[in-house]
Image (cartoon, rainbow, N blue to C red; front, side):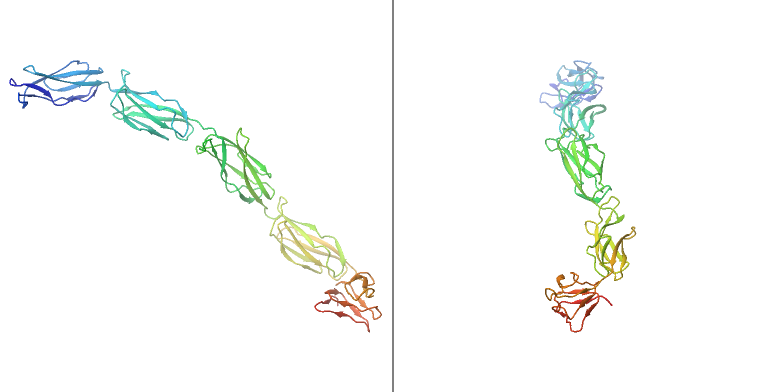
Length: 462
C-alpha cells in the first residue's frame, strides 16, 4: 500500500512540550499530483529519544522525555520518502527565583528597580512559555501576569502600600499552581519635614475638662506627601491644661492625634506640636469658659454709713466665681435689705462675674443689712450704719439756689434723711430749680418756697 506515493507531508506542528507531555502529530502520503493517499502506513522516529520518543513507531503520538532540548521527528513511508519536523522539550517548572529586585526599601511609590522573576526547571535552567502570575496584599504590581520569555523571566513594577514594615509579593505559575515564590520589600517611612493642622483647632470648652474633638495633625515630606512613622511631640503652651499622649507616631496616612484637657483659667489655651528633632512648632488654640458657680463673695460697698433714709455713696458689689475662682457670667443674683430699698433687687452677673445694686437706707438710725444670694450658694451680707438725722436751716447767704450748700447753715444740702427749716427772716427765699428731696420741711409764716417746673421736691418723712 502506498507504492505509488510520491512523498509524505506532516500536517501538524508539535507545540513546545514539558517533560511527560504528549501530543499527536499527523502526516499523510500523497501522489504525484499531491493528492492524499489514505491509509498509507507511516513510521515515526526521533533523533533523540531522551528528549522525545514515539512509544508506537506506527503512530505519530510523541511523548516528551526528561531531557531538555530539541528532537528532530521523522515520518517515513515504506517506499523511503520522508518528512521532518521538530519539537522543543523542557522540564516541568519546579521553582521561581528572584533574578533581581528583591529586598528593596521604599514606601507609597514604585520601587526604584523592577522585580525580575525567573521560572526554572529541576535542572536550574529557565522555563519559557508559561504564565507567571504576581499579586500583592496592598499597593500594586504591573503587569500582574504574563508569559515568560525565552530566558524564563518576567519583569514587574512593584508599588508598595502605605503599611510600614515588610511587604510581600507572591508569584505562581498558572499552569503549575504549586510552583510559587515570595519576594519581600520593606516599607520605610519617608522623612517628615512639616506638620499641618487637620482638625481640633479653635474649640471652646469648660475649664479643666477634655475638649470633645481630638487634635489631629498631618505630617508631610518635602514633596507634600503623607509621612507615616514620624514622631510627633505635644505640649501645653498656654494655661495649665494637659495633653495626652505627649508623644505619638503618625499612622499609615501620616496622621497623629492627641486629647486636650483645658486649663483651670478662663480664656486662651494653647497646645504646641512639633516633629521630633525639629524646631518649628505648630499651635492649636482653644477658649476655656467658666464652670458652674460655686461661690458668692463681697467685692465692695460693705461697712458704709449715711444718714438714715439716704442712699449710700457706693453701690453694693458681689462677684460669683467657679471652683477655680473664674468669674461666672449671667448668673442670677438677688439683694434683700433688712431696711430701706435696693435697686435693682434681682440682676445678672456681667462678664467680670459681678453684680451690683444701690442701697437707700431705712429711716431708722442704727445697723442695717442687705443679703446677696445666688441660687443655692451660700449668701453674703453687707452692713451699713444709718446715722441719726439732724436738721438744717436755710440762710440764703449767697443766692436763692436750693442746691447750693452755701445757702444752708450746716454747709450741706438737705436730702431724704434730713429735716429742713425755711425761716421768714432769711436774706432771700429758696428756689428749687432741680429735683431734690427732704425728710420733713418746715416753712415759717412769712417765708416762701418756690419750685420751678419741671423740678420736684420730694418729702420722704411722715
